[in-house]
Amino acid sequence: MSTAVVATPVVVAIDGPSGTGKSSTSKAVAARMGLRYLDTGAQYRAITWWMLNAGIDVDDAEAVAAAAGKPTIVSGTDPLAPTITVDGTDVAAPIRGRQVTGAVSAVSAVPEVRARITELQRSIAAGAAEGIVVEGRDIGTTVLPDADVKIFLTASPEVRAARRSAELAGRAGSSAPTAQAGSDVAATQAALLRRDAADSRRKTSPLAKAADATEVDTSELTLEQVIECVVTLIEERGRRAR
Ligand SMILES: Nc1ncnc2c1ncn2[C@@H]1O[C@H](COP(=O)(O)OP(=O)(O)OP(=O)(O)O)[C@@H](O)[C@H]1O
Ligand SMILES: Nc1ccn([C@@H]2O[C@H](COP(=O)(O)O)[C@@H](O)[C@H]2O)c(=O)n1
Image 1 (tube, rainbow, N blue to C red):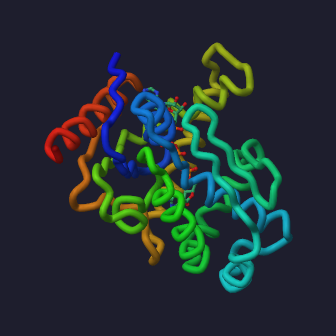
Image 2 (cartoon, protein in one colour):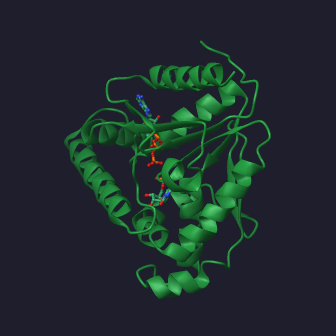
């Protein structure tokens, strides 16, 4: 296992569709290389949670835009214990629920929301003296176009759905595969693809691979292999820069 620590602050952008392994990979790479870690999806989920809690119709883009500046979102960037609060409330658990997951693409498509969250992301990245891994959908294209290393993770829809379903089943405490589990995987895959389509089609900074990003298809790779691959790409960039 590599335990590299980079000498100069490095900014790493990791983008990709839902469930490709961005969070797992980014956290592990950041922890291994002594970097900070920012989960930008959690920030969009947090503002969505606040909108839902405030009774705002998330399909009313004008109402969402008018409220976009109201909540205060704070992200903790320790890769071993990332945190997210809204107006001082810890929302790490509720932002992973179905309601937020079903509403987040509509909220994140609103330009005023993106402007607000993008500004926050840039200030967090600029303040990370030791370097940072930032993961999301538009980091390499829009948020940090000058990132030192850009990676675009992909995986087949079938693999992503199977991994996500296993994760959800693990959280719920189930084990043996059943007919119900089979239909859950199909529903999970449909939901992932719906979210990818909405995130890719929006007008403002859609989910996209930056022209200078390295694409890594994780379908046939273990998580450890993906982490090693990303660490190697960062180390190679460091050697070229010296
Ligand atoms: N290479 C891999 N092999 C096996 N399982 C993996 C791999 N990468 C990630 N996983 C598992 O797949 C699931 C989804 O991974 P993760 O949450 O990191 O994806 P993500 O791209 O951040 O998703 P989202 O965009 O929805 O937040 C997790 O349960 C994770 O442990
Ligand atoms: N840079 C980003 C990151 C995320 N989003 C939106 O948030 C949703 C949730 O992201 P997860 O990574 O937690 O699944 C995602 O579906 C996007 O709608 C974004 O727009 N830009």
